[in-house]
Length: 120
Length: 107
Image (cartoon, rainbow over all chains, first blue to last red; front, side, top):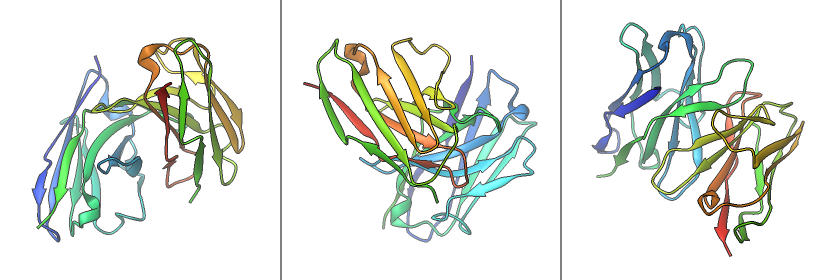
């Protein structure tokens, strides 16, 4: 069974940092690209970042570029999101999601999400 | 950035009725479009990928159509568990973008 479990969320002050993790199991993690998607309270979905299976290709939303860094450790079946210079508007539930692949559009498995609250 | 516009914002229907949800892209996304269902407090669930392919385990009452800039998600006969928020997403160009969502509510 495919499972994605996020952790690392919490309350942080504006300007602070946080590192999110996503532990993957039930599939060959090293064969799949992965994504982070966030959802502010009561709002819609916003794609945040993408990383290819080998980490050779990375993309970011303009809203986080220069502040967030996505990475992965295939040996540990883990995905990460380092978030620096956090702002109030970064408050959201952050989901990790498995990518169907280059030739297909869709994220087929999602974690349950971890809440990040940026507030003084 | 490609903008996806979903309509209507809210759709009020009764169980057993047919639901038609629309997603329009600001430029062509070919068939690189997905649909998701999200219920309160839950993660999104992939329904349709590549515009018209049902994801694993998705009932046949869900179908997707369209290409280029205009896409439709159809639910042929609504079940009580189908009332939720639905999002479209494009993966044609980076950044990937989502529509603002359509809330399907019980009439």
